[in-house]
Image 1 (cartoon, rainbow, N blue to C red):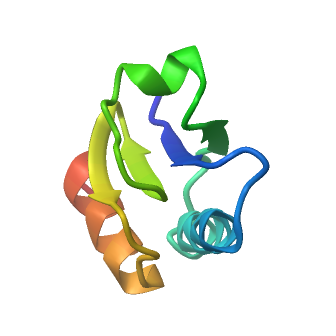
Image 2 (image 1 turned 90 degrees about the horizontal axis):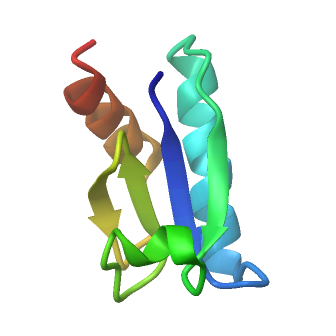
Length: 85
C-alpha cells in the first residue's frame, strides 16, 4: 500500500503543520485513499530516511521534498510521479 509521511519537528512547527495540511489536501483532491502521517525527525522510523532539514515529504519510502514547504501542485506532481498515476 502507498504511504506518505511528513517528517518534522516534535511538536510540529508551523512549516511542518502546513506541509502536512497541504499533503492531505493534495491526496484528497487527487481522489486517493492514502493516509498522510507525521513522524518526528527524532524518531527511530525517521532515521532510515537520513533527513537533515525539515519539513520533508516521503512517498513510498523515498524522500521527495526536504527543507521547504512545498506548494500543493509540487506535492501533487510528486505523488503522481511516485505512484505512477
